[in-house]
Length: 370
Ligand code: UDP
Image (tube, rainbow, N blue to C red; front, side, top):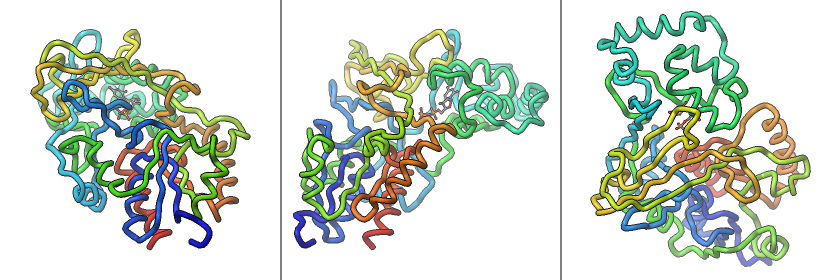
């Protein structure tokens, strides 16, 4: 370590930084974690309101098929049996998600998988021979017109703030189609919410690790860089380089949260509003993630929003323009690799789920600590 007080300065106390900090400490390294916010945990942080864990930065549902990642998180916290089964509200009617036999029955009255398949084949006939090159084509190719119009187009266009033909196809490949009556949104083997909340997971990872919140790295960069031999930076990669080639684009969100004087508002954790004319994309009722029995309830309306310096970068816009910009920043990053390591959702500019984040952090651990 020589002249440095720490082996690693970790910029960002989110899931990626916290997993790396924990593992570095386990390997006998001295680490300091800083974060610009006044709390730890990045976007998985929850705020307790009326005894309910409120997902302040959007709903987080842990799901994975990676056994190593599942066992990893389970050494810190137990998970409950929450299974995400969102309901979609389109023009006042309710439909189950993801697209499954319940949805097909609600849309068309079909009762058997054979009837549903025949219906969908008819619906997608004119698109069956295309090679989808954008989200609209991908959706039409998979399920045809009715599903696209009622459950995808409006939601997607307000979520991303651009026409569906300008959105990459891979975004919708996440949504399963099933010919069973199964409303589980995810195909993964493991799923749940940490018992006691996500903050508990972060507290376990950062236990006995030096952390400083309310620290803006860029305002004290020189001094902070002088503290540690290596810096793990988990923030936006363009910002690290002063956005000198231009800004990477993100889609942001605006949350409106209210406490309601009733015990159950919508009977489900997630209700999507798929029509274009309703400005929010979904209403989250937080207590249902943990089967809460509190007297009151807390709901959050989620409004997609332009990204600016005044809000959070949630979704990377992984189109060709942004991907080529990213490459330029990654080249700069490789030039400073002797001192700076880049990792996490914002540095990798990827649409990471929590399990992807942990997997990436554990890979970094293997590459440089083991
Ligand atoms: N989507 C949709 N209708 C829905 C829910 C999702 O069309 O009711 C599409 C939309 O394009 C969205 C994508 O599927 O961006 C992924 O949605 P998901 O809820 O999986 O993503 P999250 O925003 O929760 O990361």
